[in-house]
Image (cartoon, rainbow, N blue to C red; front, side):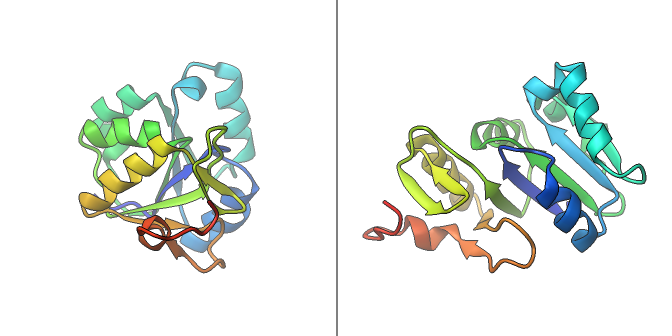
Length: 165
């Protein structure tokens, strides 16, 4: 199954998604995969209010997403799937969710091991998750908005690369 965008963004739905990714991809659906949002009527309502009415919004906890055939059905391929962190996407991946590429837009860590860009700071566990995805054939890029040049994470994680450390 092919999605327009599978993204890790600790802010989930915000201006970059609404104002740039939605129109760029002509997405008709957003799937938010986050345990906290799925268990909070208030947070889910705020997300639904932020998204244009013509775009469907589905909200799942990580385990629920893994079990839901409905979440994985994507007839027109114009769906954005959002996770707030690499731990959650790895849980979904371990439950069988497959995707050819992953976009990391905004990710902050208090335990930053590697600052990759102004909007992405990775902890050691994040780096391990990225390496697992890369070894599984997933392309991983850093890019906040469609007009940015994508940065291939492999170059940033290469041995001897001291960028941002």
